[in-house]
Amino acid sequence: MSSASTHPLPFRIHLNELRYRFLLILGCLTIGTIFGYFLHDQVLTLLIKPLDQPLYYSSPAGGFDFTLRLSFFFGMLASIPIFVYQTLEFIQPAFSRSLKHSLLSLLAASCLLLLMGMSFAYFVSLPAALYFLDTFSNAGVQSLISTIEYFSFVTRYIFGFGLLFQLPLILLVINTIQRISIKTLMKYQKWVVLGSFVIAAVLTPTPDIFNQLLMAVPLIILYQLTIVLLWIVNKRSTPAVIDTARK
Image (tube, rainbow, N blue to C red):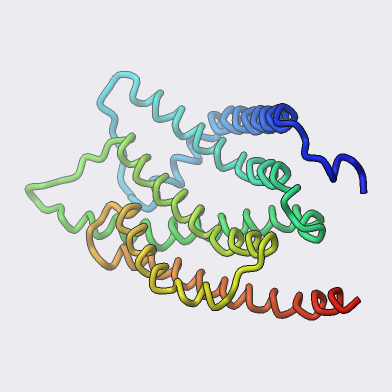
């Protein structure tokens, strides 16, 4: 065993590594934002498609500010894989040996879950929320939606679902570092249900139970699927652990 693996590295080394990875992520974000500026018309078309009506700004610089927000939004989406990979690389010393060789698989799984969450938000939850909010309009009350308010509304939905869909991967990584008891996960199910509805109430700007169910139910289902996945993983690894102990 090498000395590097038996003695922890100085804090300064970790700080320098963290700064290097942060600058790398920042550089990718900047490049993605520049590309987003040239593609902001296409990004705008996708964002306002669920709304199906034009947006308005109320200040001379409102259009320019909105264009910058769209460009930055594209840059964030483009740099997410880099952010996830650099984060995994930074914390990989805490991983087991098998997990260290699976960083690319973790990255692919994280991006897939992110895409699933964002797609669910864009195609299912967001249109339902917009439809519900539009029911309050009538002949005397018409919506005049501003660019900034709509942008905040949409990004909260999209990124919120994308992050929440990372739950199975997070629990799987924690289970690899330290085994999680399936009984413990089952015992906390009622708190997961309660927490899912609390998160849904915070992230969804609509007070109706239907839109909260659209966010809470996928979280609850994801938690149940994660329990099944961890049960399979732990069951497969148990014989290997027993054989190692006997040797």
